[in-house]
Length: 599
Image 1 (cartoon, rainbow, N blue to C red):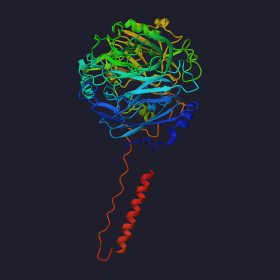
Image 2: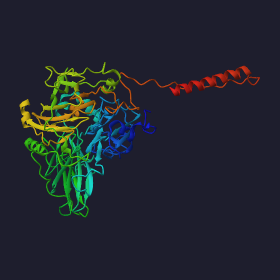
Image 3: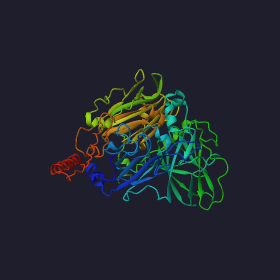
Image 4: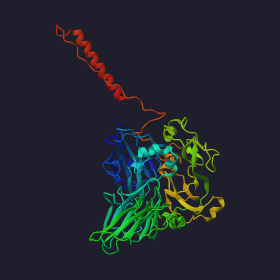
């Protein structure tokens, strides 16, 4: 077995992280034990397909923690291929070793286990987790992750009666392994999308083949917090609740200005919190998630429908589904995105208001213009960034960086970050991010669908959106006064999105499309933020349970002690010389075993 959490040294307890990152007191250790397995009995879409469960659950269990807690997750890999989990939006302050992507971690091999240990340093909000390699997210393994305010930090709205997690996402009818194997086909890589929408792993209330739908019970007059995450692989969706208004209050760790909404667009990888008051007549009401940029009808399997159930209701949901914006009206979606702004007057992870840290007068150290597109390379379909499709090496970049300065695994700054290669290529795309510098990233979308981009390790200040090509003159249109901070941002077809990030978190960080096909087929790169100071307060050293792989294989297991076979009996009962010889063999065996154990 790989190193498990049971005998983990107390180097990664709360006090250890206190000494490394100088966080505040009152954090605690949260210990979780996960068995990750394949289940073929769940059949969320009436197909014989493998579903990835955690402790028998699909979706996986809630991780419910508080700011600055240390989360230990001992993952037992009971599936038949290597596995990693990433913690979408958790910034892994000064500790990219626990990020759980191919560039930072060796995979957990089948029948092995490994313990993640990460701190929710200076964060609050709604997030999710999911498998990060081998297209496994298409089979499940995802779940909700909440980071609650410390008691001394007030929440900028009255405490709701209860909180609900809604994990909403598209779903293939085929096995994820089959879909993965079809990614070398142009149609599957570029044109074929998932054909169902699930809400908390369950099909639509409206669909005749659904064996169970999701339902949320409320009491008339009370207010509830719905934490909504798009855990799908391809489709953005519009979310709404029949006859009920929503008040937006938070997105991916930032409290927002509170705005009232009839519906909310949620893009792949994003999370939101909305408050909903049960202020209607006793009854049942539709909860709906419908895909963007798709001509679906109300009874399509691509429309996810759950039920909001008043606890004294005897009236089933009825009437047409609540209307939604034209799914091709991107101006509606863009205007809504621009209306989502940071609440500058409230605290979040710290007592001081969010707005004490702003971007009105920052000096930019770098500008990246990153163009997402398709790429045909040697007759095979790929996705690319600036015409470079990321090639995943066998050795994690972070491991190579630590043990060999990257030698033999990647070449730093080999590919352009402000324009595109003339011809598409595959390569290990790693770019330098200047430590403690401000970076401007402009995402350009050459695809014909909505893309989502995510940067591990940081939050984006979302300063601008636009159509067509981006030019430096368009900075005059940016909102630098109260841009919302989040970890995943959408980019509309033919358009651009601009963000700022402050690179104060050393490490090797994945910058990727959140669309699973795009990510899997190369639309990603890594940002290397390096601090030469060896002080562990600047960046955590490797964990003691570090896994080795690729160019750095683990040492061979020590040989088993020799098997001692007793001497055959003699007519004289065994000569003294034979007894002395066997005594020497036994002593040598014991000494050898002790020596190997001590090594």
